[in-house]
Length: 424
Ligand code: NIG
Ligand code: FE
Image (cartoon, rainbow, N blue to C red; front, side, top):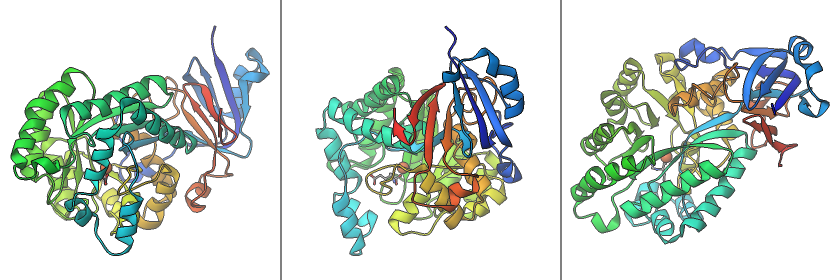
């Protein structure tokens, strides 16, 4: 039986139409394809038609039942939000380190003393598959309640072959059992394990010769990410790890220039990464190289906010011609949030982006950053029927009122999962 759904009378419907083949750059990031008094009709989880309510209602309303109609009067519809950089699957929290940082300790000092990523690695290694699944599923539901319908999730708190695979298996099981779509990234090169500190090259070689081939063989990841940072992986080690991933079909991503300028943006361009993420301290040369190579910049202003650091130069990067996406970086150390809408506020207030640009950066450009723009990120015929309906009168309000959750309804594959701000 055909499953139908019609949503009508939206004060504003933001389509993001026209950028499924290439991400939006420069002025294109302001073209959000807004339809006033908009409607959308879908069948079997796929969008059939988007347009003014008068046209869509006229065409489809008679053939469907009243229970298959949602009235979005006074609300804004966007494509389901996409969070292209999360560390969703992990165990435990690190509020003790937050208290230490408030007393003046830095993020890297805590990590060098055996905390930080190492603390979460210990907790994640100790957790069973079921415990990891349960903790991560709770986070997934909170992301959904904040309007997210697709996200990327990284490993990187296992740091041994078995524990990295455990994390990726949990992500796979979540993808299969939870309606949110999850794209997986292998990030075995997230930290040098404390036990291997005396010989980092030995660990690099394990990542290259043991972990990458096994993860690729089991088809557990699409992307391969590295924390390229002084005291973690050097640009040379990062390059070798990313090149090794490429030979096994894993597409490179980089945690680049997060704490200090370290050549991460330049490296992203030279290895042909799909995205370079963070970029708080990217150099001018790095920005130019990324622009020329067409690397997407995934900016994570929640991390700068929470680490009390300078923000990435989002405005400058957009003006340079880099396609920008935004993400939570959801993780227990540098960005413990599950609110992508708050990240939109920060994009405007702290990185000089406009309300239109932050919408583009959390929908179609975010989809490009994780390779799913063919099916998600915009409201166009043929795409998945993934929408978020916000209880705001216009899209400007989304990046104006902050620290509030305006999500009213989330529809994934044509099925309402959040209604009235609550999980159904
Ligand atoms: O994106 N920088 C490396 N990875 C994460 C933080 C991980 C953690 O602190 O647990 C990030 O900031
Ligand atoms: Fe991260």
